[in-house]
Image (cartoon, rainbow, N blue to C red; front, side, top):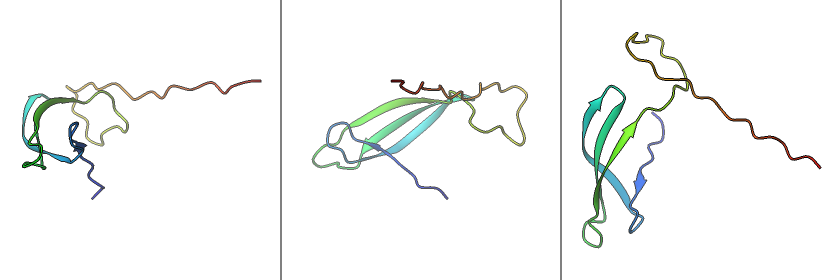
Length: 80
């Protein structure tokens, strides 16, 4: 298992947890977050998470799914 990072609350900086989520399409989810600092903050918000590119191809790809590959942009080295 990898390290799980969370979204910090934009108001108090505490951890925000996903309260619920729903599938909008094969590559998009709507997520509802809640600040864990209930007493002092209590902020809640929703966000949309979308897959935007493929970093590593699937070993069992779905032929109906077409997610473009991630392309790194090269930054030119300064001269001079």
